[in-house]
Image (cartoon, rainbow, N blue to C red; front, side, top):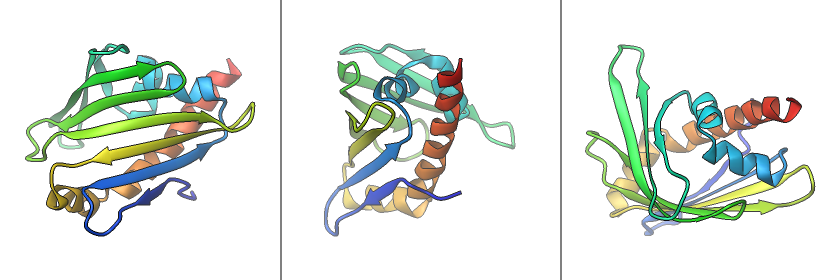
Length: 156
C-alpha cells in the first residue's frame, strides 16, 4: 500500500513536519484523533484515558506479540475542535523523552482533509533515534489504517 504520509526532517533541527492528505471529511479526520473507539481501532491500542479538552490528559496501552504492555501518555495543552490539538507524547519506560506535538487539521474539499503535525524533540539525537526505529514508516502505515477505519465510520 502506498505511503501518502510525508515526513520532513531538516538537517540540524530538533523537529519533524508530518503531512498527510486524507480522503475523509475534516470532521471525521478530527474524530479519528478524539473518539476512543476510533482511536483504538486504527492505532491498535487500548484507550485508557482521553480527555479532549485544554489541560486534559490521555493514556493508551498496547501489547506486543510477546505479551509485554507498553504505555503512551501525555497532556493536551490546547484543543480546538476540527482545527488543532497541541499535546505532549511520551512512550513510557522507553528511554525516550517527551515530545511536543502540534496537530493542525484543514479541510481541503467537502470530502478531503489534511493533517499537519509539527513534532519537537528535546535533542537532535532523540529525533534521530525516532527516525532510526522506523517512526516515519510506522506513522504512514498507521495513517493508512486511520483512513480505512474512519471510512467505515462514514458508511454507518
